[in-house]
Length: 142
Image 1 (cartoon, helix red, strand yellow):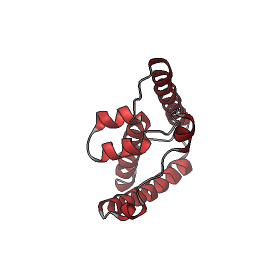
Image 2 (cartoon, rainbow, N blue to C red):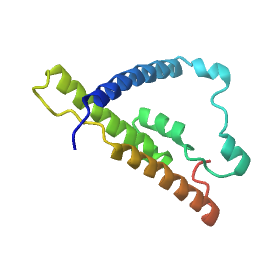
Image 3 (tube, rainbow, N blue to C red):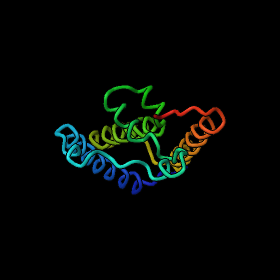
C-alpha cells in the first residue's frame, strides 16, 4: 500500500499540537487550576441511565497512565494505552526519520486500520463493562 506523505505530515503536526496541549493541561493540573472549578462534571449518560458510556473511564485511565500505572489505565479504558503506544511510536519514529532527513526510514505511516482498531477497542470496552454491570451486577468503576 502506498503511503501518503501529506497525511503523515498533517498527523505529525497535529501530534505536536496535541503534545503541547497535553503538557499545558498537565501543568495546569499540577498547579491546581482545575481544583477551583470543583473538578470534572459527572458523565451525563451514566448519571441518567446507570450504564457506562463509550468514554467512561477515560479520564481515570489518563490519570493512571500519567502516574505510571499502565495496568490500571488498561482497566479503566484500554483506548488510552493504545493511543499512547501507537501515537507515541508514530511521533518518535516520524521525528527520527525527519531529523535524519530520511536516512533512517523508520517512520510509521498512517493507516485506516489504526482507527478501526481504536473503534473496536471502544465498542468492546463499553459492551464488556455494561454486560458485567447488567448481568453480573458488578460496578467496575465506583
